[in-house]
Image (cartoon, rainbow, N blue to C red):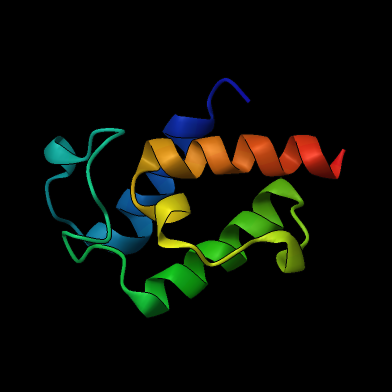
Length: 85
């Protein structure tokens, strides 16, 4: 999953930025604090991760720290996919 951060970045840009400049969207950029991902966005993100990376949806805890940044999401997905294997 070497392209995982780039895949997640592309998903966030496509689904949440709606034409805005993604220049500030670094791996550490706080998606929740900035308001890019809200509670509905979190549900959309969980659904996407479950489908795209074959993570059972029941195994995805809705903890903000897992979704705070692209880096955090990538780390969570890597851990969850290893655990599911």
